[in-house]
Picture: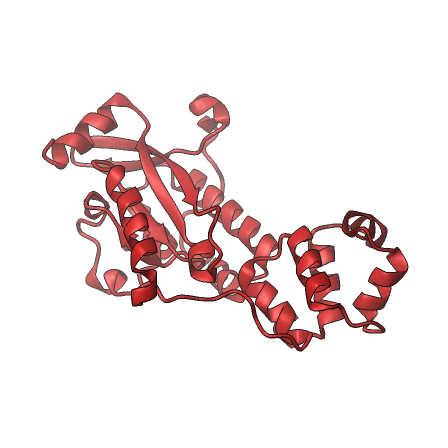
Length: 264
C-alpha cells in the first residue's frame, strides 16, 4: 500500500502497527485515552499539529515521513531537506569529510538512505580496482556494487554470510521506514548470485557477534568489520538519513596490508 496517499489517521495506524503496538499500549505511551487515539486513527477527530508531532516522535517516525504526516493533516512540513552540495550545507559537509578523513588509512564512506555513495575517504578506491566503469557511474549504490557479480561479489570470500547480513540490515530499514526505494533495491539484489546461507563456522569469529567482510586480494584475504556512525543531533532530513560506514581491520595482517597499500 502506498502510504503517501492515505489519510493522516490511517497513516498513524500504519505506523503504530509497524511498531507492533496495540491501540491501548500506544495511547498509554502518548498519555491520551484509547478512545481519543481511536478517533484520530478513524478520522473522526483531526490531530493538532503539536499532537501529530508528539505521536510521530513516540513512534520514531523518520523526519521525511513526519513531513508526510503533517501534509496529510493539512499542515506545513517542519523539517528541511538541504542538498549536500548547497552552500547552506557547507559546514555540515565539512564535518562529514572530517569524520571520513579521520579514519584513514582505513576505508570509510558516507551513504544516503538508499545506500548511494555520497562521499568517501582516500582509502575507498582500494576496494574498487578492476570494477567495470558502468558500476562506478553516479549514483553509485554501494550494496549493488558489493553484491553484483561484476562488482565485489566474486571477491568476497564469505559471500553467503555477507549477503545474509546485508539483507538483514535492509529489512530492518524497511521495517522502520517502509521506504519503497529500499524495497525495490532488495528485489534487485535478490537476483544476484551467491545465495543467502551463512558459512557454518562464522560463529567462531568475533564470538559470533560481528559479521566480517572478507575480501580476496593479491596480498591475501583482507578481513574487515564495519562500524556505523549517524548524526544524532541532525534536524535536517538529509543529514538525519546520512550514514557513515567505517571499515575496521579485523586482524593484524589486514591492518598492515592496508597501511602498506596506502603508503604508510
